[in-house]
Each structure stands twice: as structure tokens, then as C-alpha cells.
Image (cartoon, rainbow, N blue to C red; front, side, top):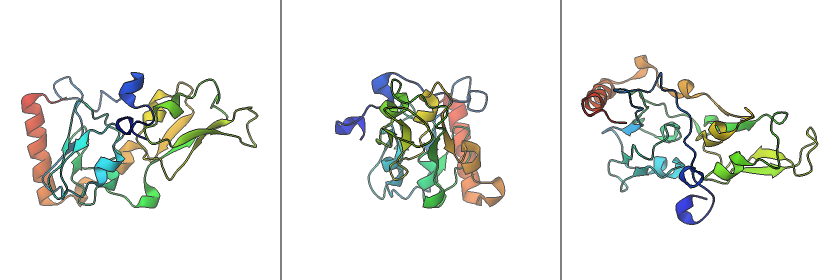
Length: 202
């Protein structure tokens, strides 16, 4: 559940800022957030996937991403039908089939299970829980992913101090190749990058 629905803990609730690659995602020395371009059809798919409620907008209208809430996880881009979302470098994210959406994978041998539960507490969608497993002997079990709830937002991956949780596919693997971009998408990308460089958006 999301924090605003009175359910589980959000990123802000536990005071954790996920790691981002500042070598890749910089604009005037500041990390840039994802953004939505004019090809948005207002379908609201992205708003349902965002773990921090950073995306707002009325149905059938252009949506907006709040850069102060965006954590650059990419969960929105993979579900966007018109591929109207740019990543933190201004590159177009690729919409992919539902059965290929990013999902968390727990390496059971590395998960310490009970006594930690950081990934469970950080998940806005209650997609992780302690479950028993035949391969790991822990009285309370190890962290287990409910794939139907997981959005691949990468919060669990970032908060895990034991390198036990990873999201696949990787972020670079869900970008739309340059050769597949339309002339309109290329023009909108350039406009967005110019605007971000001009104001130093973070």
C-alpha cells in the first residue's frame, strides 16, 4: 500500500534516498529527474506504478513528474504506451510487454531474513514478505517477492545492505534505441534537454 493510502512505509517515511548514478545523471552538477513529453495521452498507467506518487495529471491530459519526488527508478517508463517518458539523461524509455516488466529477484543465500526486513518496510506496494524456503534455514524465513505486486521500482535494491535484491532487466536495458525514435520523439528529447540545461532542473 502507498503511504497516502494509510498503508506501508514510503521512501520518505523511512528517510532513505535511493542511490543513483551521478556520473550518468547530471545536469549542471545536479541529478535530473524523469520527465514526460507532449506525446503523453493521459492514460494514467504511470501514476499507478510510481512508488513515490511523483506523477500527477488528469485522464487524457498531459501528466507531470515532480522532480522533488522522482527517484529515477524507471517504473513509469516501462508501462507508458506512447513512450512519452524521458529518463534522467533525457533518453526515451521503452514500453515493454507486461511479462517482461522489471521485477525484484532475491538471492536467498545472501538475504539475512528476520531481523532486517529493510526491503519489506521500504516497499510501497507490499510486494515483499518473509516466507519459508526449503533452501534457507531461517525460522522466520527470507524475503520473497510477490511478482503480481512488484513494480520494479528499485527501492528494495537500493536499501539492501547485503546485495541480496536486484531488479531485472537493468535500467539501461529498458531504453528505446536511438534508431527506433521517431522525428517527433527526437525533437521533443532535444527540447527537454535544452530546457533542463537552461534552468538546471534536478
